[in-house]
Length: 306
Image (cartoon, rainbow, N blue to C red; front, side, top):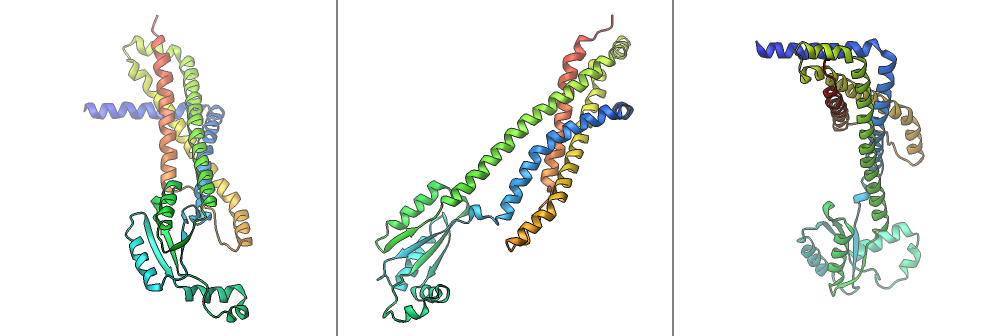
């Protein structure tokens, strides 16, 4: 019975808060718009990073190196060295490119077939194509792997072009930090908006609060509808942010598809995923409830019946 009464009181507080929001549609709409924009901005930045990673096809992790062996190293020795390299925990794959295979590919794609026919022997060495593991693509990991191969007496040159990879990963790291900073700052903004809105509502209902306390209402009882109001603000702002994100994807989808076609791709923008929406709604509800709780906790204590 007590649990039923408890649930009924919460339902009444929720419905009462919803009714008060409906009776002030303009103020409610403006508050929701501010919260929605504040929540949509970091989510949009995160969505941009996700689409950028998707559009590049994971190029940020496409790190490999070519280990050119000495010209006199036979193919059997190259196979043996490849087997030893595969035992390293930071190596995902090692492929042996035989000198004859390399010459055939060079003949096919270079256009110098006639000139190559004049050669008496194959000048190309056997090559090991090494792909590091995805968790070993940092600058220090790649340098350690390069030194490992360069120390072999059979190795002539180790070619590793990581400058563009490091730049790409650095740009993504900066963008992720920007998303985090924007989320923190705009989250604080949501707290301020909700807190100020609840403060004004508390002041407008001061007489009602005094009467409620006069007849025995506790601070928790008085605070309950304001908490539900903050929760509804957060939930509504998150829903509006979702609409903003979907509208942005819809508006940009065709231009992005056209641009991708010009580069020979069929890439299409991806909208917010389930985890992103979960974080968006969870963050909105949490910020709305927390902002209302802070404001109510601060201002309700100063209101006592005369």
